[in-house]
Image 1: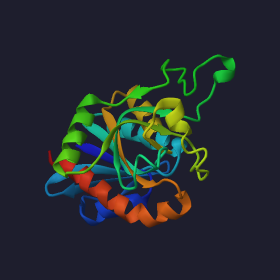
Image 2: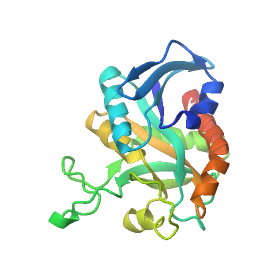
Image 3: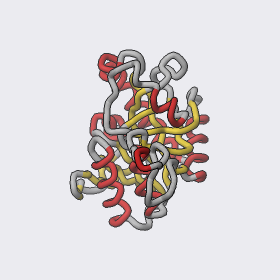
Image 4: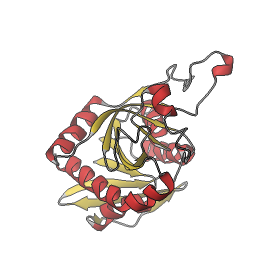
Length: 228
């Protein structure tokens, strides 16, 4: 069984509408866990809550409660650090992750450095990446593949939105994926993420306008992944 992980229920609405619950949801910390079925494919839906702290809490709970989970996929919306190049509703398939707001440079570390792992970059599982890429190809989606970075701020200033790309070459910037990747690295659970770009040059307006369309794409990608 795979886990599909999203931060917000409104990101998961299309997934919930197109699948069947196999039992009552349970809450662990603030994360909601529910086993569901899509056309005979059983999966675990996890809603973590917004931000790196709740993502980490949910990932830790999943790792301890489901140590034999086959793998985990994070789906959701994301901002574009390069809105003129990476357009709205483009899926970004993560091959690696970084935290652009993790900063101990004052003591000589590189930006994003995770002291316990001795790296600024967490690699995605090649197995999960390969399966997600096959899903994107089968859906004939125009996707991009590369790094996703995370930070605990919905950046509304267009002048600052390019910072994750400048620091890490990131193609998308969200608030959870890198934290999930870090926890699953610690617990040896295969993981990657696809984030659908919901906003770029005008974040406040574009986010709300594109959330439903991005959520539908997340559902299509997640269920295609489960069906392979």
